Every structure is written in structure tokens, then in C-alpha cells.
Length: 81
Image (cartoon, rainbow, N blue to C red; front, side, top):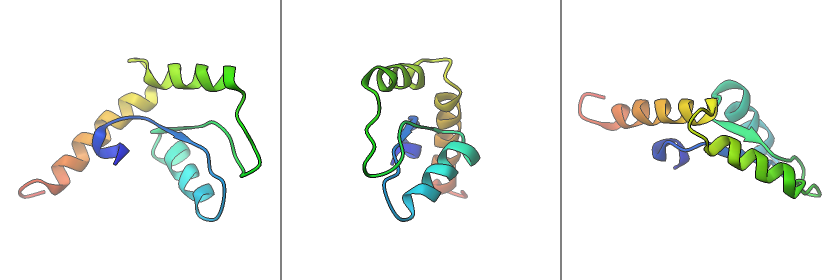
């Protein structure tokens, strides 16, 4: 849903396959930022605020990549996609 909306993702994997998914989103796809990891962890509120502000800024590489992936996703499901 986030890819089709063209927005960046905050990753906070807690269990099972979420760790692999977060790695793919952050390292391979470049559309996410990992804010924390593990079910017992809690991100620092100040750092979380900085990360949210950063990923929402127009010059965020994650935001630019998310917009590009949105175009690709919409094209894939359109006619002749």
C-alpha cells in the first residue's frame, strides 16, 4: 500500500519475516528507514521525530525512490502493464 501511495516507510521489525522485509525495504529497495528493531525495543522519541521529518522532506532519497516505485507499480497494473 505504501509503494502504491508513493510514500516512504518507517521500518520497525519485531518478529519472524519482518526482519527480512525491513532489510529488503531499507537496503534493496531504498524506500524505508529502520527506526528500531525487536519487539522489546522502543525508538528514542527525538530520533524518531528526526527520522520522520527527514523521510517526509522533499529531498529525502527514500521519498524520491518511493515516488519512482509508485509510477512503476501503477504502470505494472495498467493496460499493457
